[in-house]
Each structure stands twice: as structure tokens, then as C-alpha cells.
Image (cartoon, rainbow, N blue to C red; front, side):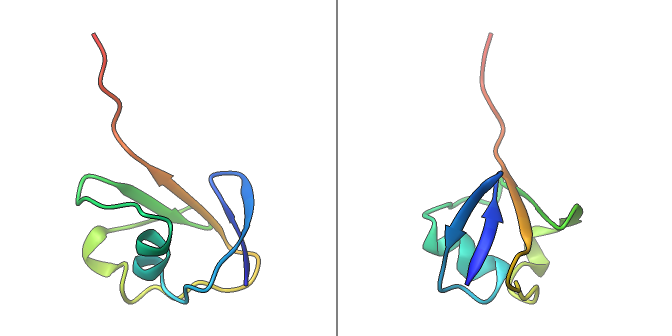
Amino acid sequence: MKLIVNGEALEVEATTLAALLKELDYEGGWLATALNGDVVPAAERAEFRVSEGDRIEILSPMQGG
């Protein structure tokens, strides 16, 4: 299915937000995710199903000085 991930159109196999993160090689509990503008807590990602055309944002903290 086609999704928009961080502003980029992607064709993916995943059907849940957790599966999408795994498919895209995102790991770690420190990630923040949003589905169509709504924040999805890490503990709930396996329950959130993604659908054709959904917009997903995946954010990770940046280090700097």
C-alpha cells in the first residue's frame, strides 16, 4: 500500500504502525510517531492499523551541542 512517511511517498507491506517501523528499520523506544497528525504512544503502535494514503511522521531526538 502507499503511505506518506515523513513527507515521502512509499510503497510498503506493513499493516500496523509497529510493522511499518520494523519494515523501515526504525528501532528504539525513543522514537515519536504520529498517524495523520495524532501522536501514537509506543505501547499502542501494534494496535494502530495503517491504511492507503495515511500520513505517518517518525521523529527521533537529535543530539547536538
